[in-house]
Amino acid sequence: MTRTTDSRKLLVLAAALFAALLTLSNVASAAEPQDLSAAVHSKLDKSQYKDVQVNVDSNGVATLTGTVSLYEYKADADKNVHKVKGVTAVRNDIQVAGPSVSDSQLEKSLGEKLAYDRVGYGNVFDAITLQVQNGVVTLGGSALDYPSRDSALAVVSTTPGVKDVVDQITVDPVSPMDNQIRMQVARAVYGFPSLNRYAIDPAKPIRIAVQNGNVALYGVVDSQADKDAAFIRANGVPGVFSVKNYLQVANQPTESKK
Image (cartoon, rainbow, N blue to C red):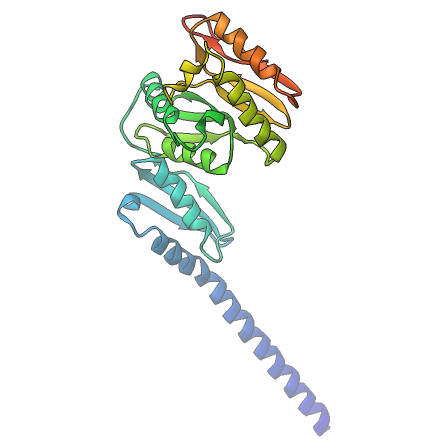
């Protein structure tokens, strides 16, 4: 009889202990979003985020709202919040409320900045394209390496008037063979008497992109003869599989890239 009573007491005690632990667990879970909100706010405790609001739900999803003056700050806020332990996802609904700039003005300004970006770092081998629609900037084309791509994204992100950035840049694969072809094509093109003047202005070169032995030429030249000469010179380089000539002749309609 005594053993039965003791067993019942142990069962009651165990049940009470389990209930207490469950209650503590629920309390901790209920407090977690508040702790996460505090951690997220500490990550955004800078003047550029003064108009940003944060909400963290019970699943650890952080929603960011409010405004910032540059797209760069919106992107950085997203990165910073993702680093907070316990945050499972980020909904970035921050609006860029900087100056209003027309698409044509923005495209012209960004085009000039990107043309001179990383001059001296082999930017002749970058072929990054630019489109602007309703303040949303889309970067495409190809970059020689990740530093070139990241630099172009930084130029756009820090420009007033940019509301959002879409990164569609392809980074050229790392290849010793492609590196050799790049230099040979550059020598063949710029070493030709009628084409060497395109090396004078670093913002207006004949750009040379190479992927797995396939060459593409970009930029603007003065005449159809220059465009044809560049193609012939590039196509004559040993090891080149194909050449696509996307060079545009000044004052002529833009051709679509096929």
